[in-house]
Amino acid sequence: MEEVSYEERACEGGKFATVEVTDKPVDEALREAMPKVAKYAGGTNDKGIGMGMTVPISFAVFPNEDGSLQKKLKVWFRIPNQFQSDPPAPSDKSVKIEEREGITVYSTQFGGYAKEADYVAHASRLRAALEGTATYRGDIYFCTGYDPPMKPYGRRNEIWLLKT
Image (cartoon, rainbow, N blue to C red; front, top):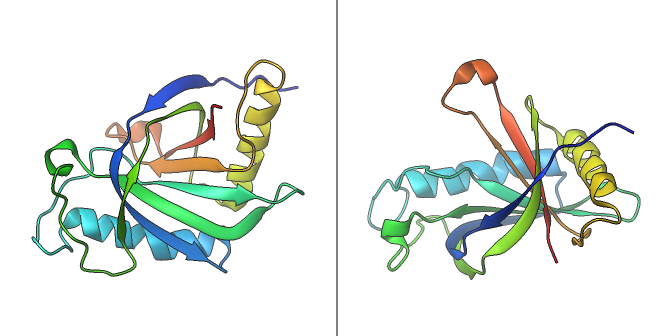
């Protein structure tokens, strides 16, 4: 079996801008939801304030018994610290502000522009690497994709499994 490197990481709680999309395949749901959250962070809100993108936009997907992904997706962006106490209200009604607890995750990275099949494959490898050594929730995957400042390294994606 292929070796999978991963790390355990604590993720800060707080207020998050979220968009939920159902009844669409993951790739299509991402194309719909990601821009809404990015526009909110960029200033499409009642204060017209661009908050900056200090952390990547992440999303949750929900696997079926057969490993495929349900047609349900939740995208979120942690509102930067300086706006946590009084976040601007989203102009787009599909963007919600919600309070989320801090979590601990097991995280693995891979490169390239990821599609649903890539997230499923890497989550499966991470689950196999953790088998018998760690406790995690298998009914949800958290994922993210971002372009690091040093472009020669290309697109980075992460899969997170929630530590229980």
